[in-house]
Length: 261
Image 1 (spheres, rainbow, N blue to C red):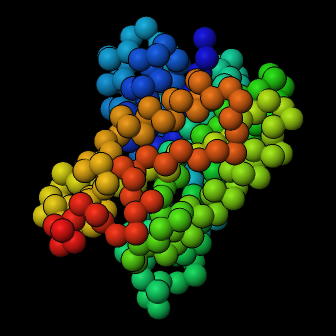
Image 2 (image 1 turned 45 degrees about the horizontal axis):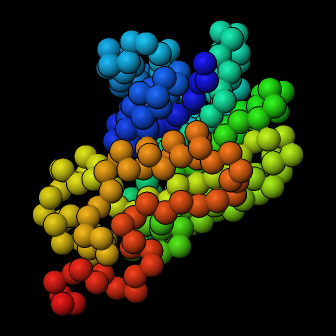
């Protein structure tokens, strides 16, 4: 049976991705930063999906000085190697959101903290995973990216930069790993109805990105469906991007916003 490694899967979209894969009969290993939250999530997943193997693993992306924690990645892969668990699919969902990063007010170290997580740490995971996929004749890697890789938003300079860089990483990996039958793609969500949406309804009621051409904002399951497509159905697709944002990327201004109608 196939096994997927899904990072950042204790809350929000990560939960929907785990649910999607487990419901299809795929074994799942998921990660989170907080050991207690990982344990709670694992108990919930196992209760809901008793017919597949599900295990949580606590791991952080960076050392205290914000450098990439390569050692922890090696330890994670070694841990599952010893258990005989091989990952056919990698879903890179974990991210540093880089919230409220303002030009003139944040240090280069804070800027690099976001890039080191969203680009550098993910590169390390891809490197370790691809070495194992190569030995087993292939696999699939999917980045959960963002439409902000193309459309910048205010006070998120590090996050926007990291998502643009992550797409470059995705394309380069698709070229370098294609010869080993390893496909590398990216899903680009726009706004998603996560816990932030629920906790701050007044802000999200009027935020421009909620006014999509189709009149609705994605939920986590929409992103999970796109990730599942790349993992399970896109046999001849690599280096591709699938935007899931209700059409926001293609509009010049929010056409369904009352202020413009």
